[in-house]
Amino acid sequence: MQAELVSQGREAFARRAWPDAYESLALADQAARLGAEELELLATSAYMLGRDDEHIRALERAHQAHLDAGDIPRAAYCAYWIGHNLMLRGEIGPASGWFGRAQRLLEREGEDCASRGYLLIPALVGHAIAGDHEAAYETATEIAEIGTQFADRDLIAIGLHEQGHALVRQGRFEEGLRLVDEVMVAVTAGELSPMVTGIVYCNTIGFWQSVYELRRAREWTDALTRWCEQQPGMVAHTGVCLVHRAEIMQLQGAWDAALEEARRAGERFAEGVLNERVCGKAFYRQGEVHRLRGERKAAEESYREAHRRGFEPQPGLALLRLAEGKHDAASSALRRVLDESSQARARAALLPAYVEIMLAAGEIGEARDGCRELERISREHRSDMLRAMSAQARGALALAEGDHQTALAALRQAWHAWQELEAPYEAACVRVLVALGCRAAGDEDTAAWELDAARDAFDRLGAVPDVARVDSLTATPRTAAVHGLTQRELQVLRLVAGGATNKAIGVELVLSERTIDRHVTNIFAKLRVSSRAAATAWAYEHDLV
Image (cartoon, rainbow, N blue to C red):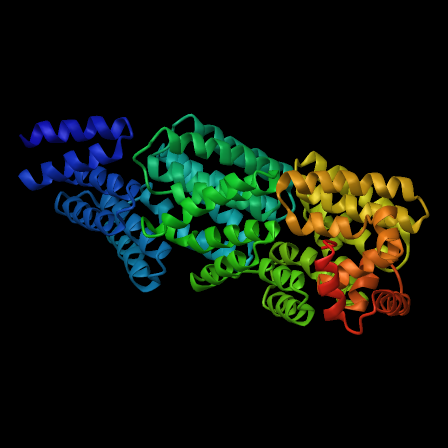
């Protein structure tokens, strides 16, 4: 009976039918205690189903069975993977204990084996976290060499993979890309074990996103999706995959699909340590889609849940506060999170929002500092996406400073970059800035066309706040005549109704605060109102907002 169940379990394992593999091997273990090799299969099946506690228990038994059989290298191998899972769960002490046990076993027996390479991985992770990329590269090289010595494909892939990451972080971009792409060929060819395949997929996609290499992140997210779809019973890595897909979909403008994927990822948080780690990120992504649609209450709830699960909900929450007219709250939040961020690429993710918020608050000096830092990071870290972000910030700053020629040159560059990256929302936002630059240069026809194109894009996306913003910039002569307001006064009124201060309106329309004060005074006189609240109510009553 047991032999038949083990055979069924092995066959299901080979097909990556994880529920069937786990069930057959678990039943076989109940019939009679499994041997070390079968316990490893049971452990892997449990891992792929997100059953981490059972994964560890099966590995502990396999570890002991290998010790009893005198197979020290394999016992050390099992000890490493126990420590690895515990480390992912944040149980650093127990993880260190298992790594130490494995190391002591190998040293005591004088064993030179592939397991020695696995035990270098914690040191490699430490070097990467500390930012010591040269040490990380050297350790990764040693791991790959040990893998080659003992023909361990998993170990070779891990070593080459991390060599590539270290090279990219050192600025040796092309060399790093080649190594990572080489590893991914082995991954997609099915040459690696299931656990290492999933880990390499997720680490690689996360890495490409962290260095703003959008095209490769998109390519490997598609590959990860196909891999997950081939294993419908798999739970591990699926939450990670869904979050990656949601991020890509949002950038490509598929907001409904992005929201659905992010929700599915959030539902996976209790199933496996890797899924739990991305749960906060899943809620943040939901918040971003809600914010862009103007669903402020839902956005805030999602950001709060992301924070509860340990994920910093910035810069999204600050941009939500900006949309609510709470400039001080938005500015303070971004200053705080930037003060807490030291890694350049992490700061780059915050700086575009920081520049936007500082410009809206009229803090031109701070916006200029943020823009300069973003430009420096863009120069140091090769990325089309970083260049687009930097050019857009540079153009917005130049507009606020009244330099429409510099602004338009930078904004055209940003628009082309976002178009190439297939990012319709970002491209539309740039078109609005281009329109303001053209208007400042006296080219009203081009300004109107740019605003029309931006509005169409926002409307297709469902970006309700941005549609309203464009409408505030495109009052028609007929509307102006009916209400006795000039086209510029209608623009100012709509921004007042949106909660913007005079200083923020000046930045938005590239006018001085004194000019905006005069427009607001004229608006109050023409509408026969005496406050911003009354003017806002009038605008809503007459369907101008």
